[in-house]
Length: 416
Ligand code: GAL
Image: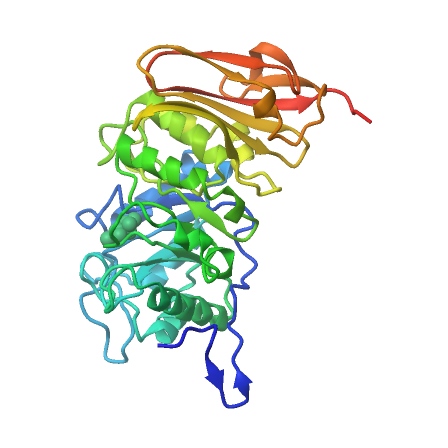
């Protein structure tokens, strides 16, 4: 099957409509139903409750704008006109009304489909129906579409077909005239699981294809989270205003959430997602959200790092790895105001002193001898070691186990 890049039309080559929706200048922020409501609790009542809580909790004010419905919103069959419809048992008022409710709360409405003929939960999906589905979504006021990778007719790893089919949906969304954030979920039933980096690296992928693309399997616990970090460490240069590497959803600490971690793990994730410019999509149970998680998600200084207008994904400037799961690393992200955010991260079962030395500073966009003030973005105050000089060793002592800090290094004088 020819790809959109090689199609021939009556009057010569048809140039593919690369993604041109003007969206995704910063990583998207919001909530996704999958880890919380799954299929079992997917309902109008619960989605409306989430919308209300996003507003009343302050999450919306902190920047979380998308309320994204994942799999299981759709009825098992299309209607007589071939359109997707919402599952009437789950969403008796219909999807347009739900979108209106979400918009009425000042939020944006996200929805899910799949490039195959069925979703990962075996419900109707978009293959061959991209134009009609894109139009239906636009008519409902959808602002964000996540398209998954299950049930491909030629296998999940057939890159030519994969980029072709995702490209058809991209172009169909473009053609609606409604700006709709396009998120490609490379996961699906894709194997091998750890080889999703080509969504960023292939010339048909990245920001030409989508506003965000998953780079690893579902993040469900610490092991898959570490895999996401490792894959993403190699993909920094592919992120840009308009398209970002998606390391998957944020896991909170609440035992009432289907997937959860310890407090330290969850804050390490938040620190790293900020440095990596990954989408901040909450997967926790918002209806029973732990105060701790709300404090994590609404840390404005860390959100500002994630949303920085330079839109540069941070890089891993130092790493020492003893084995899978036992490592320490230092990450740095260049920010628009000339400062640098750094994460110091330790997963060893003993405390560790991590040093940004000359070779670490060499990778940062700061002039040698630049004097810096150092702010701890969890303390909201000067770091314990409050001053640094670019090029000279700066050390942080981290506790045993999973421990991390996020610091902001800001020039205190202009060097000429
Ligand atoms: C997976 C995807 C998840 C979720 C799920 C729904 O393939 O990675 O994020 O969307 O399908 O069935």
